[in-house]
Image (cartoon, rainbow, N blue to C red):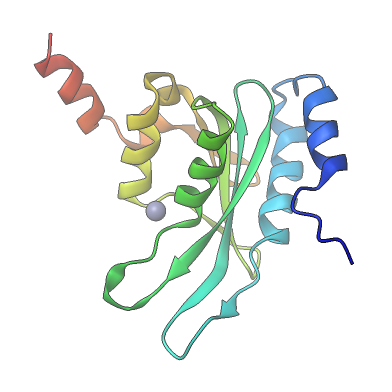
Length: 158
Ligand SMILES: [Zn+2]
């Protein structure tokens, strides 16, 4: 049996698909569903697990990337947003239009402080990232992190 390392159809559709127009209501449902789909928790060892939280982000060009959290002893894991960001960075993008994180029970989670700063650090344009906080509520990242270290660093260097 030949092992497929890459989902050829998924890659082809992501290359051929036109950019997704930014439409809050349409995108929320789509992103929420995708986040929920990857959110199942899996026990890796007695003390370590992955999943339990799934995150999905929509890039400025309309591509979608997912991530899951990793929980290990000594705090060496990471958040679902963090791994979705890494997936995005592999494609050469860094601007995020929208993001949502979902617990496996369907509850939406706001990004933690570290993830807010991470999103802000990878592109100054991400101050405009729409962070979904519930089905009917979202805020710009700049509203959730008004005094970011990214802004401070830029100001200090100029
Ligand atoms: Zn986080």
